[in-house]
Length: 93
Image 1 (cartoon, rainbow, N blue to C red):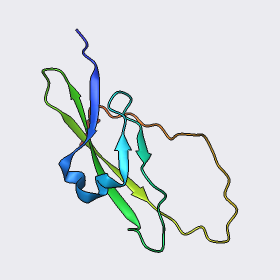
Image 2 (cartoon, rainbow, N blue to C red):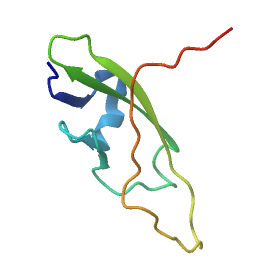
Image 3 (spheres, one colour):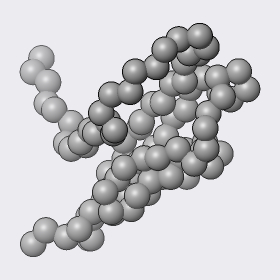
């Protein structure tokens, strides 16, 4: 039987989790405020935890980098970037 998966930002994300929020049902990560390249960290490391009933939680690190776009025209792409987490691929040696 498949149980629903819920998502959360793990404690390992530290204070950086104050800048981001995660939808517990979809796993979509959103900004809580506008980031400022001049005064905020250039890179964030978020640890996302996926939890399914009666199974060991699975974590994945999401790296977010800010860029200085002063004087640059911004072209917006798709509204969201989506990625999936799953078992690590096996590597043949």
